[in-house]
Image (cartoon, rainbow, N blue to C red):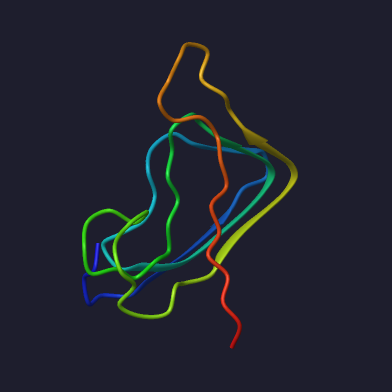
Length: 97
């Protein structure tokens, strides 16, 4: 995370999009996913933060965060079937302009 390159990603799907791995870093600034159904697997982190460190949960911001749009008729955060240190949660950092 914290690279200079800016990446804008748009995904349109007629069916289900399942996010199975962490998304963010490497310059990802904007992410839009349009689908009939979006599933986010347990323990997955989706981030459009521009940061100076490597941990998007604790690192200081180095610029404006990007836009994250998840647009679906059904949105599902999967809960781990076994005990897991990471359960589904939505973390937002909102600031006024």
